[in-house]
Image (tube, rainbow, N blue to C red; front, side):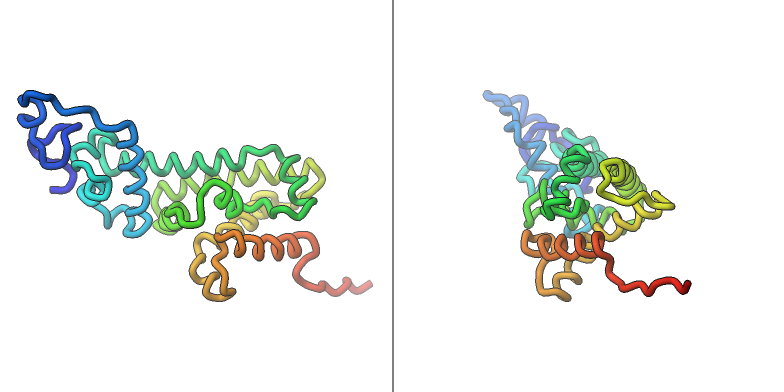
Length: 234
């Protein structure tokens, strides 16, 4: 039984019963303030590696060095823990995407970035973070959490695109929703197809070197186009 441990208290160490925690000469000491963060970090890594369905509460507790009961004390259930991680990941992108359109326009003009969500990802997590792998699972699993995440990013990208149009950096599209979806999916390819892209071009696209290569070509395509379109017949 992974989601509960009979006889264990919320704050007792793994394997300690309620009697042992409360009837002894010295009551159990409260856990360090970082216990919740440690549980969440372990869950993020295991969910990214195995998926949510393939990870038990006991697995998370073992990784975090605590008891399954304490995991449930902090998050209520495995679903509650996943919701907390989803909120944290979404908040990372919300913070990174909060820059005014004028700042992004200046960066684009100076060829210091392409304004992609993959670049936003690199700005808030280190290259060895499990967040990209978790995001990939979330988006490809087809669940409500992935749909909510994509919808939130789509709305953020739509707002960003409107700001760039207003700043005179981006062209106004005949179909703004389709344009936003196209640009967003292009950006997310770095995350969803990370290993395949790395194998094809010889550089991990989520490392600074790989992101620089991707940005340089993205700016070239966005600014100059990828095709030579013949003039329309007179």
